[in-house]
Each structure stands twice: as structure tokens, then as C-alpha cells.
Length: 340
Image (cartoon, rainbow, N blue to C red; front, side):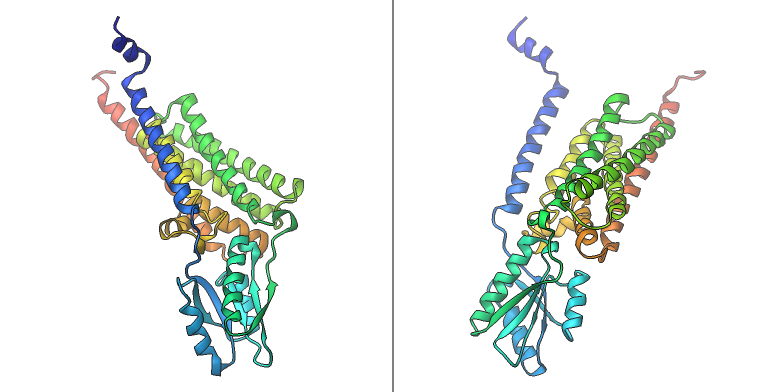
């Protein structure tokens, strides 16, 4: 037997193609993470200004025309309106101008992302200094002491995402990537649902009561976790129904390669390049991270959008999984010899 024959026996064509696919995933992983994180720059950060009418327009134009367009400036009626916009996450910073002095108040919310709050402070401080003014920084939604970089919510959601696609992958490995009929597909989805509830409860228990790394409602976080895990797991089952075992790689591509760097964890959306800033809110890691921070630091404000995103992934994944199993059953019946 020649060496070439030995290679063919040791590594099948299918295995070789899978290795090439894994190599592609690795390259995509490096490109995605390095592309998202290598050079964060603030761009169009939602920012409110409260100022007397005679200076409001000029100040808004000046802040809105800073080099690089770091701020997306709008006005607020008064301090209460600015606080409302900060707490419902409509803006990430607010400048309250004191016409009687030379020190203005800057509102930030480090719970929405420590790096974003620092960027807002740096931009506003430099702009005020250029006008011989100073700022007094007030954090209206401060990060917890044990979550100073506000990464706990991101790591929690990443853990839930990993659990979701690993559970679906195990079901594929143990009983075939493609369920043979809708009943088996429903059974897999029911198993995934039970696993998702357990994952949500345990993940929230560890991040909250055990480690004290993330404040907020335990039940709220647990419910979010169950939805994240089920959405990712159902999506993975749907990919497996479409592409067999390769579907696991497709899930990793969407959730890990594209979803994690665009989730707004280390760098919230206004600090990410345009591509990642655009796709992040529509993928499970991004929706989950935003929702976890809202529960932890903003009393559940601005939750409806992320929960809708996660629900869409969950429902579509479940429906596609069941429909593909039905098509597979019908095709198998048509292919049966007559009389069988």
C-alpha cells in the first residue's frame, strides 16, 4: 500500500473537508475579534445637553462637530429629562450647563459599560477644557464594586451561549444530527427547554448570590438566561437540521465568531467599528448582554428590543427544526419500496 493510500485510509475526504472548515473558522475567529477590538474609537455616542436657550444651539453644534464625530448630540429639557434618558438608556451621557459658574455637571452610566463611560468623560472634559470650563462627573448607574469593568454580564451571557450550542451538539452526537421525524425534534426541543431553565437558574446563582459579581433581580436574570440558552440551542438544532454535523460549525460562526465580539461586552456599541456595531444588537450575545446590563443596572429599562430579538431566534430555531424533521420523514416515506 502506497503512502497516498495510507493517507486516504487515515483521513477520509469528508474529514479533510471538515478540517478545512475548521481552519476557516479559526481564521474568521481571529479576523472578527481583532477587527472588532484592535482600535476602538467613539462614534455617534448618544449624548444629551441641558443648557440655557441662548447657548444651547451653539453648544449642541460645537459638540456635534467634534473631530471624528464622537457624539450624537440632542437636547434635553432639564436635568430630570436628562436623567430619564440616561436611565432608559436612550443616551450614554448628558452635560448640564451651569450658566452661573464655570463648572458643569456631566452624567455618565458606568453600568452600561465602563469603557463607554470613560470615553464620554474624556470627550466632554476635553471639549469643556477648550472653553475654559470644567466638569463634575456624576455616575447615575454605577457599576458594582465587584464588576468594575462591567464584564460580568458579558461573561454570563457568553457562558449561556456556550451551554446552548454545546447541549444541541451533544444531542446531535448522541442520536444523529438530524432528527428522523417531528416527534423526535420536539423531544430534543423539550430537553433543551429543561436544560435552558436549569442553566438560567444556575448561571444567575453563580454570578449573583455566590460571587456577588452582578446585582439586579435574580429571577429576571434567570429568565433571561433560559431564553438565551434556548435561543442559541434551538438555532444550533436548526443549523444541524439544515447541514448535519456541519451545522455545529455554522452555529459557532454566528454565535462565537460574529456574535461575541459584536456583543458590546468589552467595548459597547458606540466604540465598535460599523460592521460589528450593526450586527451586534441582532445576535443573541449582543441582545443578551444589553438585557443583562439593563436588569442589573437600569431596573429593567430598555428590555423589549433585546427580548424580541432573542424570542425571534428561539421561535425560528424551533420551527425550522420541526419543519425540517417533517420534510425528512415525508421524504423517507416516499423513498420506501412499495409494500414496505
